[in-house]
Image (cartoon, rainbow over all chains, first blue to last red; front, top):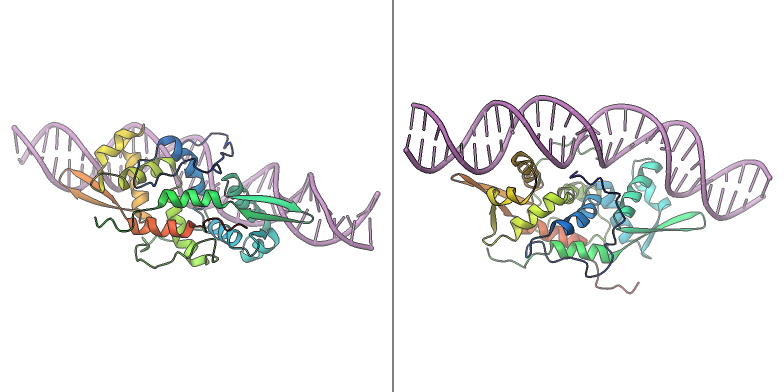
Length: 125
Length: 125
DNA sequence: CCACTGTCTTGACGTCTGTCGAAACAGACA
DNA sequence: TGTCTGTTTCGACAGACGTCAAGACAGTGG
């Protein structure tokens, strides 16, 4: 993992306009790559990709852990670990309301990742 | 890594229309997640993200290993390993022409990943 | 045919990751 | 207060990953 021994400073990928020249138009600088790669890495696990989708597509924009966990054949701690990974990657926010904890997606970050991957319509080689 | 012990069958993510309902609109099924997650994982390393960008943004659409390697403080084998990862994830194609090997991006796959991450403009909650 | 250059594969090493069980923590309710 | 339910943290383990050095392979040019 490319010496990411850094403390994982919870980089603020949220700030709109941080980056996101389309990857195919301008070469991504090392600094930007170091910041964005963890977000892609967080989505690089099938369980987390589904979790992210379940949270982002939830009716009221948020999903309870109690709804998420039963959807997988995994233990509570494992789901909690994956959610922590998504949280540390800046992809979701967590909020405790009474007994349950609710997770909410951060659309700005998703938009940035999408913008980075955007490719011209056809380019016709 | 979530039992991805599967042989990594070089899934044909290329076929347009394979997937890619926006992640935030419809819950991603497990099957789709299993196919797409490796692509995100491949982009989850700063070096590979830069390699991908250098290849995708290259002038004639392709980049020679001889141009890629000197851009990093890494040995040839290491770069080769990362390129193999991108290849196995279906993100790039390789072609040998004479002495040099050229890598070329696969825009269709990038478009699919971008589509998956696409979020409504603002949603205004 | 034989060197030489460029690229890839192999083998090895330390680190990180995904998973679980057990235990700790936070709120709700009686 | 005490107990119960839901969630996270801790400790541990097998397996995967990133990196390199050494060797193998492919093409070029003498």
